[in-house]
Image 1 (cartoon, rainbow, N blue to C red):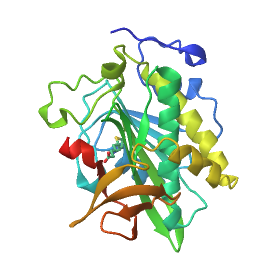
Image 2 (cartoon, rainbow, N blue to C red):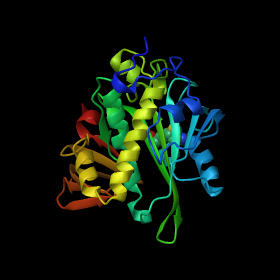
Image 3 (cartoon, protein in one colour):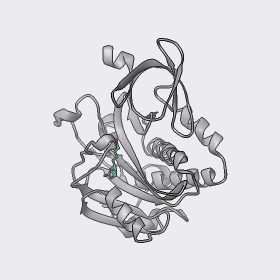
Length: 280
Ligand code: BTN
């Protein structure tokens, strides 16, 4: 497979190595990525971003790793990624949001990932509530947002993003049928630097819109890309399982489920799947 830089995101670094100067040099942002740290290997970019935040790191600081030894997913799951093939990064925010509104950061991040993938490939990604990006029914990106609450608000938030870019995960049995990468879906390698630029620039635009009170506009964009909207789904929350139609999704992350047995439930988090995927 060959690297295929597209359009105005063409980058001169054909090696596609993630170096801090390269990333800072291509970014046209004012908040996100003014400070960039790149590591060959870290325990987890989210853990490092939290350590930096506790030490006072500025909003918009980006932490990137080629490899993680303790890559973390939601619900204490692992995030598997071989060195040098994918994007593994975290962004520090110091938002003026209530802790209960923190999902808005996940929402704007998934929108940014979709827009960057659309800019760099011919693929059609969708967002799977609450925090994944899917292509063709398989996961290509996961987002893990972690908070340090302060009073009712947020001291800092770390949004960790893992995107399977050039990863050939076909030999990995635990990911078979459930995960994919951009290169596998599109048949060509994708420039990680160009994709990262696309994500961070879109994230900055979305964050500015959020700060300017344009949450309804962002929510409308987001709901328009939701894979499960209007579908019959099974949602697992802890030990409870709910089946029904995913009628609506709120900006603070709640799914409104029209339950099969009648009535409506607002579900704040969980694992959701299409009933037809499980039973088909
Ligand atoms: C999920 O799908 O459960 C979320 C996965 C998030 C993975 C990314 S990779 C970069 C950042 N660092 C981590 O340890 N996790 C996130």
